[in-house]
Amino acid sequence: MKKYSIISALAIAIIIAGCSSGRMTIEKRLSSLPATEVDTIKGDTLFSGSYEIMIIQPVDHNNPDGPKFHQQVFLDYVGPDAPVVVITEGYSARHYTSELARLLKCNQIIIEHRYFEESTPDTVVWKYLTTWQAATDQHKIIELFKPVFNGKWITTGVSKGGQTVMFHSYYYPEDVDVRVPYVGPLNFGPEDSRMADFLANAGTPECRQKVYEFQKLALQKYDVLFPMLLNLAEERKWTFSRVGGPEKAFEMTVLEYEFAFWQWGLGCDEIPLNGTDKEIFDYLAKAADFNYFADQGLKYFEPFFYQAMTEIGYYGYQFDRFKGLLKYAADDGKPEFTFSAPLGVELKYDYEFAKKVDEYIKTKAKHFIFIYGGNDPWSASAADINGNAECIKVVKEGGMHGTHIGNLPPEQKKLVLSKLEEWLDLDTKLDTKHD
Image (cartoon, rainbow, N blue to C red; front, top):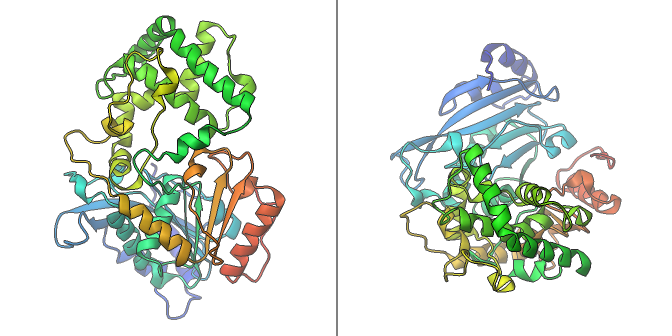
């Protein structure tokens, strides 16, 4: 990432911050942060200054004097009186302008999740990768910047980032004013059975049948397609030791295809049931991604799967549907993705955690705007507001995992924007044509 001198951008920020009497200026806040790096970076023209910051955090918040790590944070500054959108990433962070920051023309803070990329401790102790530790990271960063801003605060995130919005609010309900999780599931186990029920009824019967027929076709053509995987793996330098070999990786990818098809809104007419062997292989590789089961791909997702197998849950496969066609992949009584979690680490799932969050959302949560896609399998484990009048839940019919405010139907978009206006005490109407 290209970095610039912090001095010039701060000069602009000082002028803007000066209108906020009695507040800490952005200059003073940045110069006094518990951070090892504060660098000016190039940002959207919406902002007067953009910064990359490496905040010092305890690995264990119960032991603040113990080992530390550096957490990557991006700050985009508009002014002290504008709202602040906090993006609680579930994975690594990249610098971009979020939908809400653009819609509200406001400040933005992006927080990389602990144990991902730049925010990984030198010595990884997996027991400290918990929802509470991550929420406390986010809480401390919000507290650091609260003295700078007068406006309302919003947390938001997509997918696992949407989960972190829920978890942060569960632990720290007073931190922010509004919460907008996109397509964030609340799973009740490492193999949440609701996914299978959802997939059995997704889309039309005709499309579900085509998805199933493609899976059977790929397994029937194993002798032809598997050598193509070996060639691709050699080209990409993939290995498959953790999943149990390339043979099992091939079959697991075929099983994964069904979930991926609905998650990403792939077209039924594009399924190549009558395609050439190469067309069938290329389609499977693109739709389901063999790299998801490669050692190299798993390395990035290892922190996620530790959490999935201990607190936040995931889904499994239906092996019985393919009896006689599967030779290597089978139900061994363990969650399917145990192999994706760190090796040699105890994985004990906390089944009570999601129940507590579920109860919080139904009874105590305030000012949540839950957004889901109706065809996204993750909507099977969507948050249930159960009549909580302080929250709204919007499910886009036919929507997939990329559902957001800008692509909602007009009436749903109008509802979301009206709640943002109400809960943020906005004086002006938001643009309902926003996309």
